[in-house]
Image (tube, rainbow, N blue to C red; front, side, top):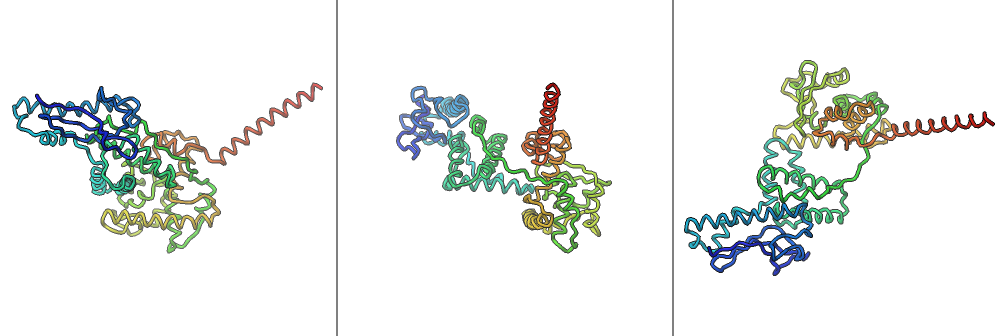
Length: 421
């Protein structure tokens, strides 16, 4: 069989950073053709004698896994050639015919095209929030890559590090960058699950998505009481903002998007049954007196299939998402006004009710696992990050107890010493 398949580094056209493309080179009847692998290496990271990537390469967590992946690609190419030889048809193929056959088997999968298709699928099943998050991440990645197509193979450790550095240079915070990277990671994981890309190429095992701690968005019970005591006319937007905030707090921090989706049909035998949009987790919440007072105003003269709160007004999924986003903006604007009326220094937003409920639960020493269940988190780790520190007033109280205890011990020793004298 006068055909060979080898990996080689293309030294002829290095990129600006000095890296060269790793090629799968086919030689058939003395004529060459090549297929790009999507992997770029510095000359020092390639063993030309063994045809392997050296351990000095920093673009992957496991050099062994990456080399195994390359050998698998080569084996698949040789398998195609061997089958043609067994069928006695190999000689009738040109090297370019072979290249096309092998390329179809080992072709690079476009991250951009896969993500665009995924976004459309999410929209079809009403996962508009996830679709928008993926779209933001995709736009950021396309901008970084100067609108050129990028394959999953090209999104390696070095690519992620450069992406992060590029955004830091623009003055973006780690938290804003982490939103793009978390979405990219989720897309990559989905592609592995779908069999689109090999697990060996996964770049996030070694790359850490960094974020900075943000100040906890929670208010105490005294502030909640001040909000409860506010009086507005039912025609005022602040009346509804107050009700939405308290309803969320009373219902274990129900997110605004889930409140907007509530219908009368969700109220059954004195309880609220609903499924959280973000995680699909089912909820079953008892309607307390506080919740009932709010519901009584909104459920008057409504049918079972009507929304409880007057947030969603249109029919299409996209328009409904826009209704919720627009209502949330008006809601947050009125919460600032409510904060001023109550003398609340915290930045009052729709999410504060959720944080406040969680913080109150922690202060009451409710187990983290139970708080996690009430919040609908998929793991306790998420809840631990959510509640990674106690509020300053609780810490101040503990501090005071420690100081007072120390003073008592010092005074007691002083009395003993004084008595012995």
